[in-house]
Length: 247
Image (tube, rainbow, N blue to C red; front, side, top):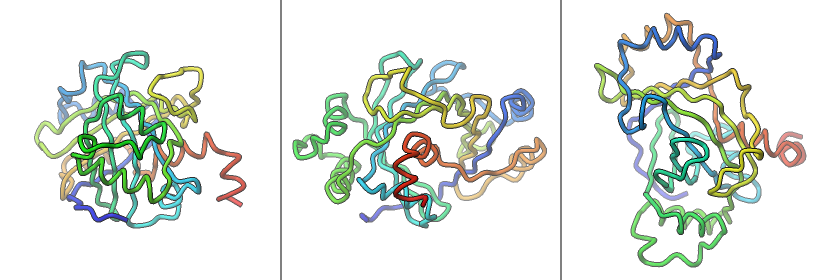
C-alpha cells in the first residue's frame, strides 16, 4: 500500500430513527451552524461510486477490521438526484485505526468517465498532476480496480458554532446500486438502510469537545460502527458475497 500522511481527524457515527430526528435537531441547534458550502438549508445529495478489486480487497479490509485501510471512490455533489453534478472529485478515504484522512482532487466528467470505463492506461501528464490521481492510478493497476457499487444519500451538514474543527452531518435515504454510471437511474437503487433510519456523524480534530459529546449522550444517541460502502456492497452483491466471503 502506498504511504500517506494521516491527520488527527476522527469520526463518530450514530444510527438514528427518523422519529427521533426533530428532538435531536432541537437539542443540537445551539451548537451548530449550517455549512454554507452545502447549498441552501435543504441540504444536498452525495453520489459516490466506489472501486474495488475483483476479489473485493478493500471491502475485506473493512470487514476484517484492518487498522490501515482505504476506500477509492468518485464523489459527485448534486442539488437533487436528477440535477447535473455541481462538483466531481476523485477521493481516497484512508483510515489508520480511528484516525481518518481524505485525499481528493477535483476532476472533470471526461476523466471520471474514463476511470469508470477502466481507461486507466490513457491517463496523460495533465491527468497525473494531482497526487490523489497518481495514487489512484497506482492502486488501479496493482489491484485491477473496477467500479463496484454506487451509494446515494441526502446530506445536511453543519459546523460547530463554538468549535470550528467540528462538523456534524445528517445522512438519510441511504441507497445503493450495482449500476456505476455518472447518470442517476432512480429505478436501479435500493435502500441500504431502512428508509426511516439515518446516520448522524460527528467529525472532529484531535479531541471531541466534552460539552458537545455530553449533549449527544443526553439525547440518548448511541455510537455505532457503520460503513455505507460495506453495507452497500452486501446489499447489492448478496449472491457473490455468500459464495466468496460469508461461507
